[in-house]
Image 1 (cartoon, helix red, strand yellow):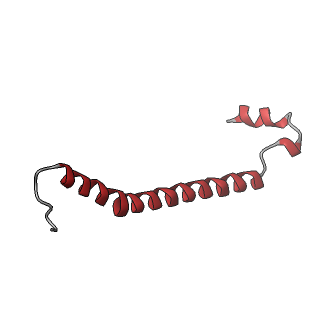
Image 2 (cartoon, one colour):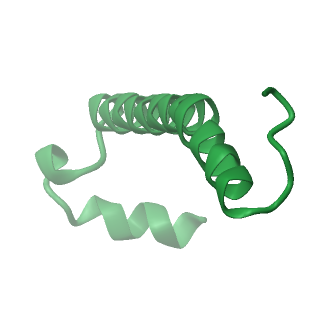
Image 3 (cartoon, one colour):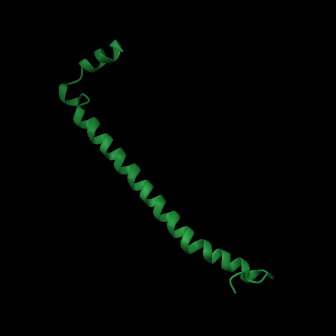
Length: 70
């Protein structure tokens, strides 16, 4: 690990990794994960409540079995 510290010494102090940069990267990571989980949750809700009943009804319309709800 001492080699890494000496590699960073030749950089200007402003171009070294700052705590604010780490904080901003962590914030954007949390925002990206939260947004992805929100999109997945909305997609799964709409799929279960809107698409699956349509598929279920189409299967019964195309089959010779009577619909269980009729």
